[in-house]
Image (cartoon, rainbow, N blue to C red; front, side, top):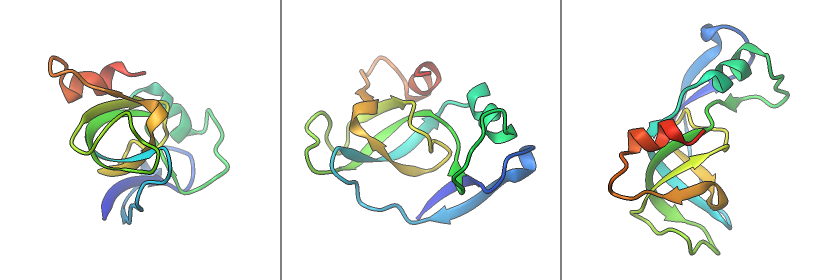
Length: 122
């Protein structure tokens, strides 16, 4: 189970709902990521407030983060379980664990922390 922050409507901070959900195994060209840091910025707020309209709910906000690859799906050769990675422009960052398309991730060098990586990706 992963903790997530779901939106079922757009509006003020009161529309943020902390919940648990099952995370499936990654599909082809996806990774399952255990997140250690996420970026929080105005893009997230614009989606939450309704400046950018959403039509599919529930919606997990947040578009960048960093963490450790837990498992990889079929056809993933760029990263392996245990690798530290960061990603951008993949909605769903407000979660402990999540699936991310592998074409959105980059491996992190040891000289960049997860917090730095999550903050710099957008």
